[in-house]
Image (cartoon, rainbow, N blue to C red; front, side, top):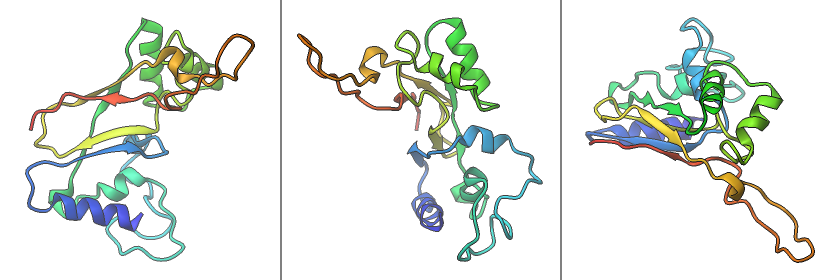
Length: 170
């Protein structure tokens, strides 16, 4: 945690724009929506020095604590392509953990096609960057791994996550 926060702070110093993206292994959209009074760490505040054994509860607010001001980030909103039911589940996933059947529906090849369809991958940008929407890329059957069968080769999934795209203007 301290290394990520220090890297963001160092990279944001003296630049007009910063983009941080990837697999955070947690739902930053949920963390962003937590009440401001909710604790960020097991002890202390997001701006206190890190101490051994102090667990971070809210990674988003920890790395986006406003200190220094140049390190402020905006989390891009995420949209899902496809049928209205897919979009509705994607919207629900922004505010609450989805029940397993809904995650499986989103991950189905007729929807997004990946095992981890929403919530783990994010794009965050400096406030000056224009563009506030990231779009999931449906991978369909390429998101599945299947063993070789008689007459068919094995299929290895391109990823267990759905890629994100965003048009950004610097």
